[in-house]
Image (cartoon, rainbow, N blue to C red; front, side, top):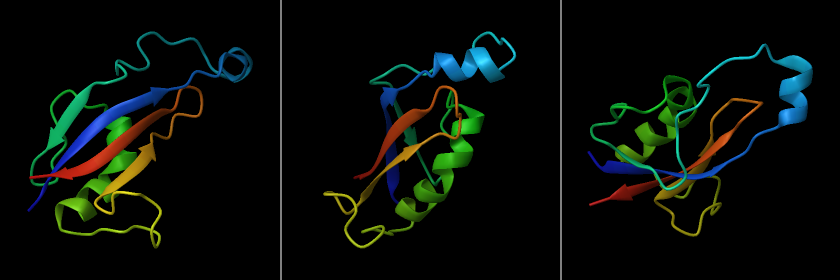
Length: 100
C-alpha cells in the first residue's frame, strides 16, 4: 500500500459569512500552510483535523491503493489530488500525493 503525503496548501477565511451565520468558536482550525502529514495504510495521521479527514479520506484511500488519474487527467501528477475540507467558513486546501 502506498504512503500518501498531505500538504496544507491554502487556507481561506470568509469573515462576512462567519459574522452573519456562525456562532463564535475558538480554535476552529489548527492547520498551518506548509504543514505536512503522512498517511500510512490509509490511516488518519496524528494531529490531522477529524473534519478535514472526512473530506480527504476517500482520495487518500484510493491513492494508497494505487488509483491515479482522477477525473481523466484533472491533475498534472496523476498520482495526486487537490482536496478542500468541508468548512464553508474557513476551507483548507490540501495537496495529496503518493510518496515512495
